Image (cartoon, one colour):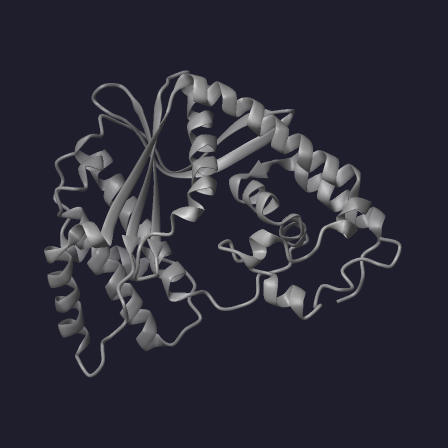
Length: 312
């Protein structure tokens, strides 16, 4: 990789910042400023798409399809076959083999189909008004457009606002709550954008987890393996599906405006004083801790050692 002159690097990052900030960009900067820079430069994260990420994308696609169908016809019956067809038609890239692709599609179908039929999926029955399905919402802060994609936003029968974020977790153990501070930031950003656009508070953010089952198919057929998963879900649905709601009051959202302004000012200062980046280690405590940076391995190998020329 050839080096990049300091002035060119600074100009590209300034341009990206003035264009707008997504939640994921803010997330990157908070975790590791270098990660934010690498993404702006278009450097791709190393490694394959994991089965849980692929399955998560399929889960999002299937739930969005269910929500759109129910929006058009609130009493519509969504069959298991409809969910399966939606997942098969999903245009989501996967670089594994065909057999694995079929397996992960089947797991996504099993998770969504099981959850949809459980009493715990009250999000559907509590919906009075659909506000957004896989929709981008944005606000202006410090003359910067800040935006975030929400999986689902709705108004309930008490006219209160709700945001929902679906996650598929691959670890077959207790949920890692150490990640919750960042989820709180994501929730606040979405809630703040809704609050500013609709002038309604409070806003409740629901972090809904689908737990990815262990792959222990062994010599069983795919159908027998999926039957076992369904049986296990029926026995302990609360293990496979969990929801963590957080309600943000009007004061919380007004206070968050100051927090967001501070974050944006820090990002601007970092860009204006980019020589300071040379003092930021590529391996921050966050990178080495629970929030494993996608670029950690590449940094360790010094693949980005010549990112910028010596003047930087």
